[in-house]
Length: 168
View 1: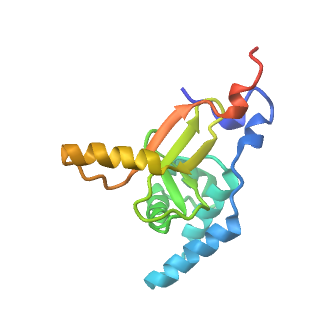
View 2: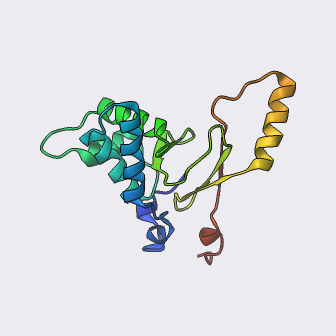
View 3: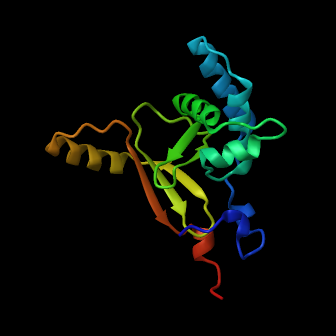
């Protein structure tokens, strides 16, 4: 089971793992997407994206709702709507294995194969595009008549920083 990155026994190790997101760039991209679609970039969308960019780790929708709630409770359905928009805009990815979301400041091509490497120790997520993996999966899918809709792969393991930590 994955450990909560904020409770890492190395006292700050998880903080060093957090992927630095260019929050301004990702907010600008989301705003531009909304403008191109003729829809508003609402305060809720901005708050959800801002929280994900600042957290540097995947978060579940209910966790997002809890963190955004203040005197007025934020409902999970509001968060899910914002997340749906942010995914369409390419500013947020969903980790199916964890039902969690994280901000992304990479520009991915349409239909590009993305590989998410999720550290089971600290929770860090690294992402990479892989033409080699994409070609292999397209070949397998073609032979079986399967049409992939969302070509994403999640690998769970240990990141380089966790692997190199002394045991004990």
